[in-house]
Length: 190
Image (cartoon, rainbow, N blue to C red; front, side):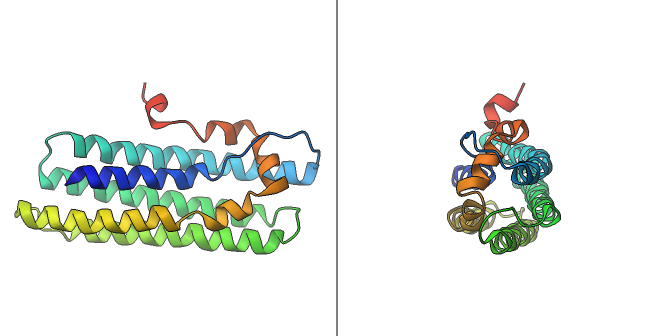
C-alpha cells in the first residue's frame, strides 16, 4: 500500500529536475544573471523536496505504524509545499527572463509552482485527517493520496519546461547551482 505512495512521490521529484538544463556557449549576460539568481534560489528548495521524498520512502519501506507514516507524510508534504512556494517566489523575484515571451513564461511558471505548493498543502491536510486507528481505512486513504500524487507528478511541470526552453535552459545549464540541484537522493545521503 505504501509502495504506491513512494512510487508516486519519486515521480514528483521529476518536477524539481525540470529546473536543470543542457550546456551551451551562447553569451547573454542578462540571461546568465537571471539564471544564476533562479538556480541559487531553487537549489536549496530542490534539496528540501528530495529530503521530503527520501523521508517518505524510508518511512514506507520500514514497518511503520500508521501514526508514524501519517506524521512523516504530513511533514514531508508541508516541506514540499513550502519548497514549491519558495521556488515560485524565486522565479517571481528574478523577473521575466530576457527572451521572447519571457514575461508570460515567468508568470506561468510562478502560477504552476504556487499551484503545486497548494496541492501539497492539500495532501498534508488529507494525510492528517486519515484514521490511524483503523489500518484498512488508513491504507485506503493512502491509496487515494497516492492517486492524487500520481496525477500531480504527471500534470506538474509544463510551465517549468516552457520556462527553461532554448536560451533560458542553456543559461541555467551554465550555473553550477543548477547542475547541483539535480543530485539524486541516493547520492545526497551520506
